Image 1: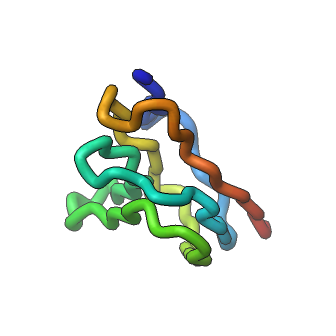
Image 2 (image 1 turned 90 degrees about the vertical axis):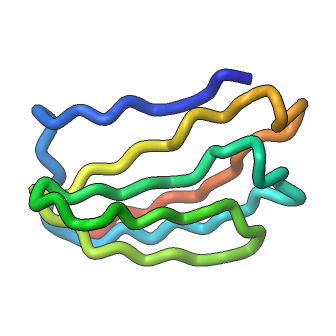
Image 3 (image 1 turned 90 degrees about the horizontal axis):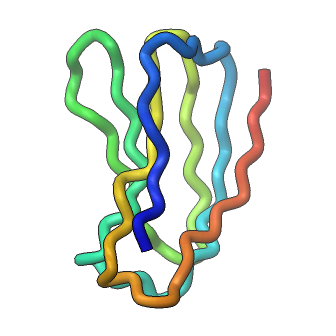
Length: 88
């Protein structure tokens, strides 16, 4: 598989709300693929594991960055399916 996103600390996040609906079915835990939010303040990262039909809501700010953790071969032919909505 090898899918992931990179964390860029030079890209500033706009203030607002992010809602993302996880439509990923039967995701193997060992495949990784979590959505991770980190804050520049050094606070513990917030990790959203794959869970079918869950709506996650995150308050965004310029110090918050996110990425999709590396999806490894344990995912097989399965894909992460997310629907994002950003509100500024």
